[in-house]
Image (cartoon, rainbow, N blue to C red; front, side):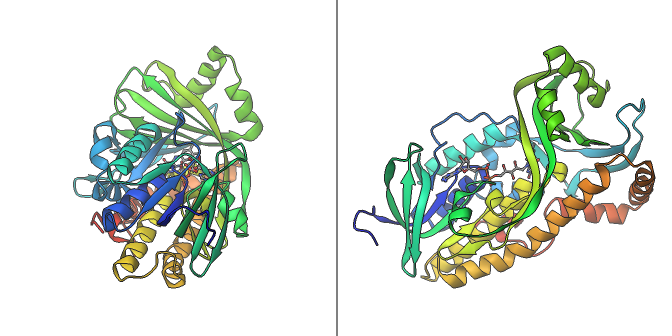
Length: 414
Ligand SMILES: Cc1cc2nc3c(=O)[nH]c(=O)nc-3n(C[C@H](O)[C@H](O)[C@H](O)COP(=O)(O)OP(=O)(O)OC[C@H]3O[C@@H](n4cnc5c(N)ncnc54)[C@H](O)[C@@H]3O)c2cc1C
């Protein structure tokens, strides 16, 4: 290793988004001081405003509870008590409900909670500080790995070297455009849908009663997701060009477009807080690991927000990688040893492909204008709606409670 390299740390996490920070806290909680953890992200000391909120499913909530973060956001988390699905043309006066779910994953445990991304990330940052994670406001700009470890070059955005760090494992939690994935030469498979998801919060006159609504409209799904108080988070999918046009509309025109989709059920509405638009695609990395490197979260996979599962999948990566690394280090193994990374990859790669295929199918089935297809899918939804056992299975699957669950997703501490 280079003689200018700083003291060696065990795990360097590139990316202080929700996935990267959750992993940092989980590792420190599992192993304590003997495991040194650093999070490097150029945005750490910036106030990044995120207009989105996330549906945190039951399994992910158990993870946050096990790592002591849930108690920091619980007051701001809105349980999703039920969910309705409609399928209609934009101009239809009535939106018949084809599918309803009530929202319990287990008795007394809501299938999901809605939490705004801003407060969730702040809670994770505070928990990381408390847990003794080193936070570094810098980007990973390059690395060189060998059998002994990985030497990582940090940059501060202006191409000035911000120092080097030597680590046992480098985790790429650096999002959908992961520089680490690219630098490691890992191919990315997938496609863009040519759709963007507009997202913001609305305040409304009446109570939402904890109900989530998903309206399947010809341009794509339009979701109204309940937040604490008389507020909801909107995820509004449109073709790329239409999304840009809609966001550029004068305020009164934007309000009119919103109202056509939102409906009048919750009374007067008003957009509050920042707005944003996010490209929608489906991508998966060919490998989730490389020498001394593991990919988690959007760096490893991106799916359509239609089912609110992207981050939840990322948190499954976090739970599986944390458990793999904690178990290995307790046995005296290196966190980035090939066997450790293989175990992680075997655990996560298949599950990810399956979820990507399911959300892709949903989006293709619903984002189109064919009346024939609408009839068939509505028949299908109607049939599912009359099968309580099947609905229960869907709920458990969507709540992340099926399959070979890592301990954190069962709510157990590492
Ligand atoms: C409209 C919308 C709604 C959504 N709703 C839901 C939902 O309800 N439920 C759900 O589960 N998912 C949802 N998702 C998906 C979810 O938002 C993402 O999966 C999640 O934010 C990804 O988190 P992440 O930590 O992996 O990546 P990111 O949040 O992208 O974080 C990556 C971090 O890496 C940093 N970074 C970048 N490059 C470098 C570098 N070279 N070195 C160091 N750091 C770097 C960035 O600054 C950033 O902070 C939604 C997505 C959209 C678009």
